[in-house]
Amino acid sequence: MDATGDESAIGRQTLAKVAWRLVPFLALLYVFNIIDRSNVGFARLKMTEDLSISNAVIDYGYGLFYVGYLLFEVPSNLLLRRFGARAWIARIMVTWGFVSMLTAFVTGPWSYYGARILLGVAEAGFFPGIIYYLTAWFPAAQRARVVAGFMLAIPLSGILGNPVSGAIMDGFQGTGGLAGWQWLFVLEGIPAILLGFSVLWYLPDSPRDARWLAADERDWLEGEITAEAGVRTSVGGHEKLWALADPRIWLLIALYFSVAVGTNVTGSYLPKLIKDSFEPLLAGSDGTYWKVGLLSTLPSILSVMAMVIVSRISDSTRSRATLIAGSLTAAAVGWYFAWQGGDPWTKLAGLCVAQAGMMAVLPVFWALPPLFLGGVAAAAGIALINSVANIGGIIAPPMVGRFGIGPLVAVMLWGVAMALIAWRKLEWPVLRARKNLEHNSRG
Image 1 (spheres, rainbow, N blue to C red):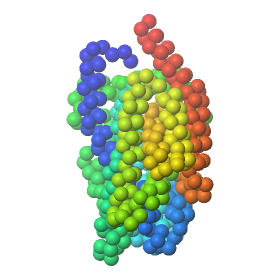
Image 2: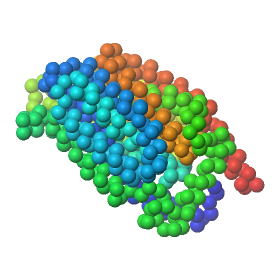
Image 3: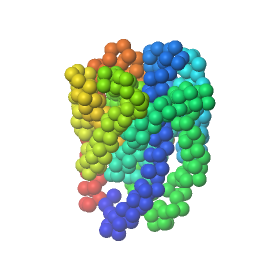
Image 4: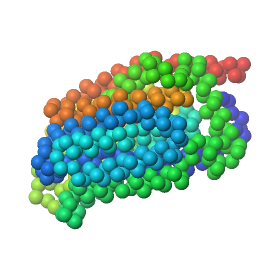
């Protein structure tokens, strides 16, 4: 909708207030979600030895997380829509915190597999629930930047979590009769439980429940979100569950699959890839795990910069799919050098570029589904995209364990092709419809 000067002032004021109130808190929740999901990548450095299990077992269990995730993601998001974000997100966090802590007491492959499946069931609905929740608070023109602010939690979890995980494994080894990797699960599961209870107090279900917004701010925000429904309708958008059969959803699943494969490789293998590359330099030194954790922060630091820059370009130009294609091209180049680099630092530089390229995709990608999905269709569709595409998380660790990281170059190029198709089939019709509506409103 075209805004007057007063409406623009109200809009800027409202969106700034909402962003500062919600995004940092949601990002904090997601930091611990990522840490509790992927800290097995660090635990494996000692867990395999203590439990006499192979890296293949760790890889298989890492992927089994997505079995529970796949089965319960859509139902969980529909329940979030029914019961409200506040209560449902709190439930998810408390449950996954307890399951993560109990992973410290697995004794072999089967108990480890069971813990990973239960963790997937517990976490199901958290990420797509937050993405769906944000669509009720931010218009499309701001959505990539907002989602980027939330998803900065992924690289921040690496910057904060990797050194802390390494320090826990070095410093708590043998304390209370537990191994360092056991303390890793215990200590990193507690914050999720505490933050889960804080959600009940802090998080409003919708703009109408936000008492910290003035009445005119709530009215402006709800008006903007309602206006976007007109654009969705003009391009054949959906509000009902039958939207799950829309080919555009499955195109986005095919695109997001490439990112899911790559990010799950870094989640499960980054510490090991770095430790193996730098083994000659680390041999015989103290604090090996902490040093690996410190080196592991470098891809995350570059990812923060990439996510901020690309998301701002995306919102200012309203370009999504073409930026995704460019970012995945950079990721393919990065994986090539991580695979074929002749020395540890070249391989690390490749990992940095690969991680930054993949992370830059995420906030831009999640601005695409709301272009044609709203209401219950958005809740279910976002969850379906996330859950089915994350089959890549089941495939990725065993693939790397068997073939190395070379195939990731092809996976990224697959994503590039899907992004270009998405521009033609999804983004271009929406841009054309928006221009037509603006022209008609002026006329």
